[in-house]
Length: 354
Image (cartoon, rainbow, N blue to C red):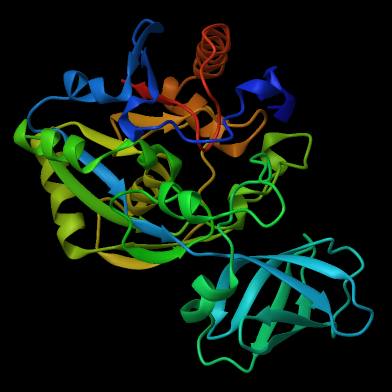
């Protein structure tokens, strides 16, 4: 299968640069897989499509202020650093921009308000261009990220130089984010409000929280020509005993499991690879493409994804489990969204796939 099979045309003005004024007033395109039918709603209508007994799975990861500004200590060139995976305290895989000419041994300085600059040294580069960066002069880097870091908005969201991050700091987190570790938001969850979550619970819908820390893979384009040639970056997850029990009970009772976002799909389907869902933590590199069988997830809430992205491949697989009709079905849904001027990507509108 070719990566280009997942291409679609998107007018640039439909890439959402700001969130809607109220989270649950984003639009909601409902796709019914049985017949490919589409219906237009707002996200606040979600309770009408769920029923008592459904288990809604939320990703409670919290986004770090993972974008940092630095300069080379020798030479003075400016470098943008995006934190990726923490290997050990103060030891991280990162994405550098520009990074091609950064060599192993390069020392970087990060300004700190009212303190000496933070220093880090490039210790390693991997074949994909990621750099291993070891920070010096700090006990634990995440503790000072609110002081020196910026909200890691995706590159297609433009902000002026020296922006006020206060609005993005609040809106680029879900209202249920509690476990720090992500470098991008699980964007399907951005549409929920506390009132909407309360409404679901009053309706008899069970809420379940899991954690998958969205990593650098969310920014990585698919560079291979074929889908099969792409390798996913690993992402860390945590699955509590409570969550595992909720999921297993719902599966045993034949109740519907609704994943909020592709991150939850990847975690749940990874965890189900050995049968019963078990509590634990680890990493997943699961790459879901058509045709794929889904063992846990029965319905999916998601955003509109980039052309030729791994996320568009995943939702195409989910649109027709075990088959290949999902790609044209999803591309037709995206074309409908473009015609109706939906807003796309992280701060954009949502889909419900039933």
